[in-house]
Structure formats: C-alpha cells, structure tokens
Image (cartoon, rainbow, N blue to C red; front, top):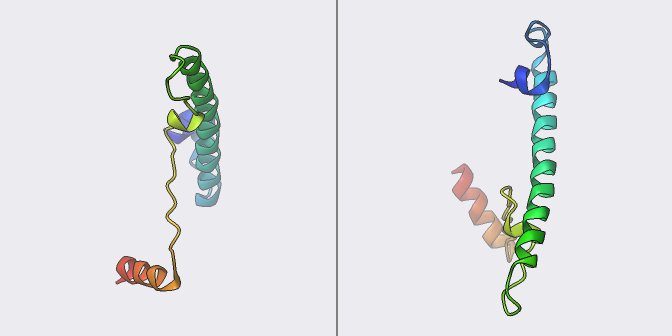
Length: 88
C-alpha cells in the first residue's frame, strides 16, 4: 500500500531500507495532515457563512480530524505519577 500511495515502483520499493520506508511514510502522513487542514479550513468557512447571527463561530480545529490533545502536568509529582503508570 505504501508503494502505491507514494508512487514508487514496487520493484524499487522492495530494495529500500527500513529508514527510507519510514521517511516515505512520514512524508505521506504530513501531506495528509496538510491536505486535511486545508479541507477543514474550507469546511469552517462554509459553516460560518451559513450559520445564524447568534450561532457560535466555527474554527478550523472543529473540523480537523488530527486533533492532538496534550495534557500539561500541573506539577512535577503529577508528571512522575504519570510516568510510573505508563512504565510500571
């Protein structure tokens, strides 16, 4: 599938190293994220044009599927507990 999506000939694909394949996959993912951000921006624009005057304004993030929620620990103890939970 990576070979087809990246446009690389299957014969050439099978001689690539793991690092090269990983770089191709990272590039494809970045391209997908960029295209989705563009699409989400257009979706927000269309939704805002068609919303009522009292309706909440939409943002690009409302339609962007790659939302990344980052939790910021409040103190060092909370961070330590989280690390212990993850790594046992």
